[in-house]
Image 1 (cartoon, rainbow, N blue to C red):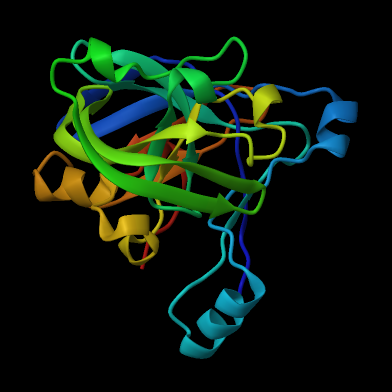
Image 2 (image 1 turned 180 degrees about the vertical axis):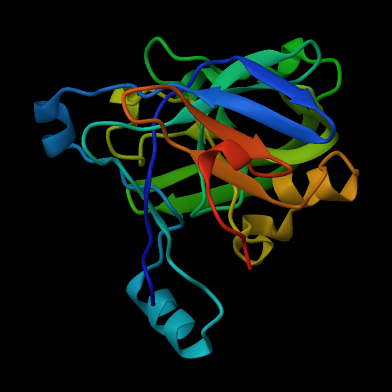
Length: 236
């Protein structure tokens, strides 16, 4: 079982798109050293011992962690519902579901999703539970419109979380929900992923995304391609 370490955190809401490529600006945000040492952020799909052993044998699942490193992280703004309600989400390459908190599960001072305020919301009443390296969240699956910049997924299936108390130190984090960018094979409930739907609806120039994490400067998450200004050589 391999393990990948990736940075996580909070970002600016500005985004620009064109030609099937969307650029989301991300801003590095520091955390106090003492806070980070006492409560590191460990996301990614959590595997229990038996599941991890089975995955290692089958070779079909990788445990990918999204860790707080050097007191920093990156996230961005999305909009959910009609009219849109903005929430800050961590873009997590170690999980594949999107969830946003309900009012009772939101962190202090954070944003939440109010389904009663959305004219396009539909509840499935199907239970949702997802465990991370840092704990678990529970709620139910639902459908509504989800927008990332100018990209719009209509009637997209995600989860509204009713209980976030199992996600350690969530109350002190700088994000509201999690948007998984991992493989479809690890999506809980067998629901389509954000990337799957963006590709299926023809909204991306290429079925790829790329992160550029700035050094003491804003970074960028690109959907649908990569920015040639941030790499040299060719991808194979």
